[in-house]
Length: 314
Image (cartoon, rainbow, N blue to C red; front, side, top):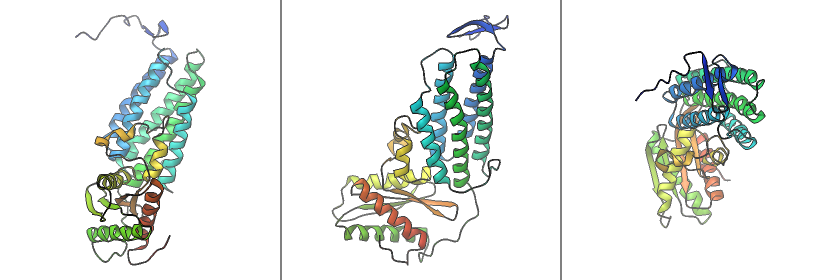
């Protein structure tokens, strides 16, 4: 198949809404920067944890859609998408917590996202120039501005999930397997005090199952759901309740729940297990309403954070 057309040999080219304009026109500089951004996101995805890699893939598709709009295609950037990105940024920054300043990149994935963010900033400057000749909407300007902020928030999350100084483990009286089993027992006992029968699950930092307990009478479906809530919270390093906000229509992670073989859960009951600034696993519980599961997951988080030997009442 021949890929060359010879139509650009004179230094002119066209887009869907522009005919034979100079190749050094601002719009081509903008489209070139977006193409570079897409490639850098592809490289970053290979260095990121599974959940953030999925986000990078989603952003690549969004960048392609934005490029199509700027070339005269269907409108992509709108106020709803901008609001969705702002909500995603806020939730990611809250999940990442306090961290290093903007210029600091501790993990390979965060460093790669730093490159993507620099390219996004350059694309924003090119867009400001292209806007003077028309074809650039205010929503497109706002979208690209928020995109660079989202990439920064993702880098913070990548650093939070990456290597860091290990904190002393909470004293559960044994290794991680024993601690995971005891945590599940505690949650089942707490659920029984509320006349609930649930399934509780724990996975390790890589998302592999570590422990799962199903109480007598708990729904059969709760086994898979609890396991997947634990996986989701570890993969995304945030609670499944918070993730739901990112996956709303217009949000930057909209559609994420359909990835990873359908294992991503976007309703309450899953929380990441963190010691110091190091992710050690995820916890999930299922069997009650979304609110009841969320409360039980928060109970589990308190117990895990303080050590299994301390008793809590919510």
